Length: 65
Image (cartoon, rainbow, N blue to C red; front, top):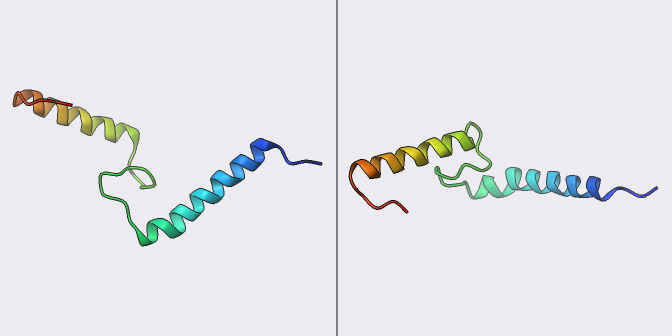
């Protein structure tokens, strides 16, 4: 019986994720503004911070890129 491609891909993703979390991030922590692989940080928080940055820049008539 052959193992499905989907199972192989999911296994590789799981192993890669575990390697990154257990090895790479232990030696090279992410910047505080990087949200991937950080507990308690989400897409919603990132969007809210971006919105706050844009609103603040507009209030001060700054250029927003």
